[in-house]
Image 1 (cartoon, rainbow, N blue to C red):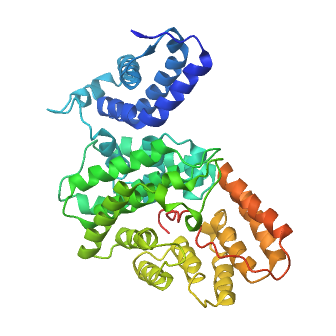
Image 2 (tube, one colour):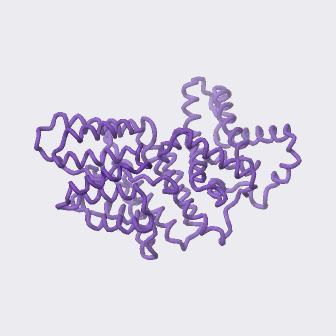
Image 3 (cartoon, rainbow, N blue to C red):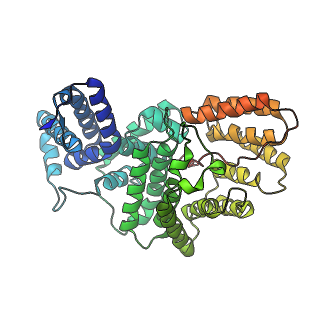
Length: 432
């Protein structure tokens, strides 16, 4: 029995909430049954459509369970009707102990990140299936066009079907070859939620899912430093969540956040995990976690050791020389006391020629900040306008618009306090 709900608007709100929180769990359960990504995705979507139609007569007490049951029944009906039933029947046999697996979403991540797939397709497919992102949202996260994102997702699905890629967590011998892309994808899932597309600054369903996956990876490989480092990075970032938005819903940069609003427990765990990872090596996630640690352990924004931050980015550029890492390094360099801002601006202008950054709002936003501090407000205005045009999040757009308005009202020659790097250093597009 469900709770009686006659209001269609309320039902829509509940369905949207369950979609955000349980999409990947429902989909993964259907994939485990069918071993067919297209079929599983179609049936999962149909189950959500049926929920919109039937839940006005009563919302089930376990919405995710209802959706899983309906999606599986739809999938079995489809299989029975298809001429390929005989071929698919062996795949419907559950492995021992497989019926209720909390690691199903992680299995789906590893399936999407199989080495037989091109890396860029691995990332796009995982964001689509694990996060339930639309193709447009996938394109925004990866800084690519929507048709390109759609093509990558389609190619990956066809490859999985043609190659018979198994739906399972790899063996210990297979894990190292798969780990880097899986960590990258989990990081991108978090990024997609940390600065979401649309009105809200954050999608906590995505950030929460990424942290859950990171914890699963740590349990899967407890002795490996990079999963520990990634989890530490995400926890230190998550700890600042409440302080990122003011009481009236506006963006608050790290420099201006009330640190008493940070989650002390999450912060302590994140710092501990990041420190442990750094003792074992300096992989790219360990270095990113080190940068986050320098920010959150400083007594204040002004007391951050920016020279050490730059050194971390220098090391990152050796192992992970991407345009976005280079951008964050330049943003940090601009904050070193006595920095040569003209030289920083020259390197930013050179970096703007990188095609991967063509639609990346944080590049012109960083240029605008440096130009403002160089007392070149007219150029800063144009940079802010460009950043606003590229921003997909309404909260960030309002923040940048306020900065632009402030430039119009600022007297000539009045220096502005440096703001530092963009709100979040997004992970680069796969393969760059």
